[in-house]
Image 1: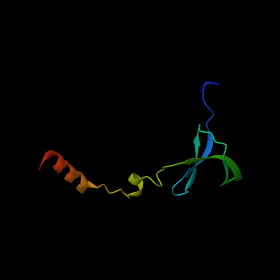
Image 2: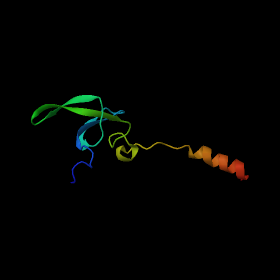
Image 3: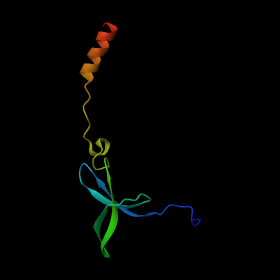
Image 4: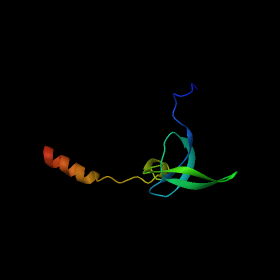
Length: 83
């Protein structure tokens, strides 16, 4: 990589705001919040980034789909177009 043109790529802990699950990965994102994380070398402090949705809480990955009110939509369509 060419020096001086790339952002700092470092270890970061992401936390799902809904489930509280945390995972360590690498990112260019920064945060003033920190968390202590147990590694094979001991306990280290990493930046903590709280996100709204991860694979731990997203309906596509969890299999919990939201039910849409299809009956209400069909009735509205029928009233609008006179069926």
